[in-house]
Amino acid sequence: MEIVYNVFTVLHFVGWAMVLGGYFASLKGPGISKGVFHGAATAAVAGVLMVGVAEMGGLWDDGGPSMTKIGIKLVVAVVIAVLAFVATRKGDDLSPALKHSIGALTLVNIVVAVFV
Image (cartoon, rainbow, N blue to C red):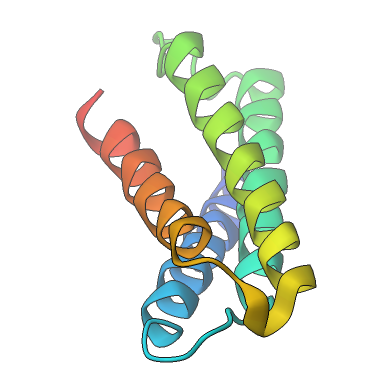
């Protein structure tokens, strides 16, 4: 089970790297890459699967992370995915506030993962 958990962890990290990298790459242009939505969806699904595998396989029997933290990260990830979906649908008519909220919420999710 630990190998499966680690595979989902890698996918989770790759998903967030796609979101953050796509956000930074889009700063000079008017739109945002479709990869940002795909990265957010990948990270959210991989995160849910990580929690399921860890709970099912007993990897967190020593306590593991708090479910409040997991819940906050899930809500933020879903909001990022929805915003990224809306942003890709708008194309070049994307408002800067929407684009920057995706980047800011991604950083918030990373900070929650590391420091909470």
